[in-house]
Length: 99
Image 1: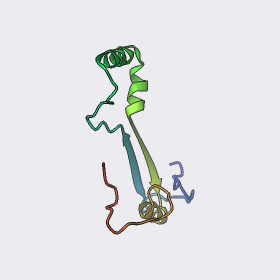
Image 2 (image 1 turned 90 degrees about the vertical axis):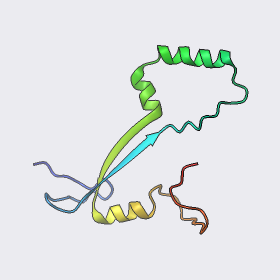
Image 3 (image 1 turned 120 degrees about the vertical axis):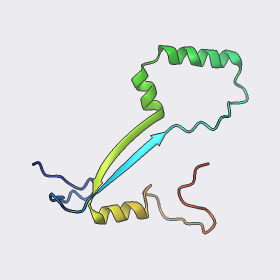
């Protein structure tokens, strides 16, 4: 069996050792609103461009999923700061909110 490594620290993850699969799904978020300056001609042109486009590229543009194996230490670091940005916590703003 080939060695399995933590995606962040590159530590070998032995068979049977505790490891975590982090799956990241990124999806386009359409809020239902169209731009104010968008007329019917613009929508029709957009729909025609979709009809001519490569379906795999369209799917890639609106949805992607990736998975990463992490050791327990790197999983904790990831969960403490999943976006890798400097901490600027607000006591009133919930984490991981949509819209």
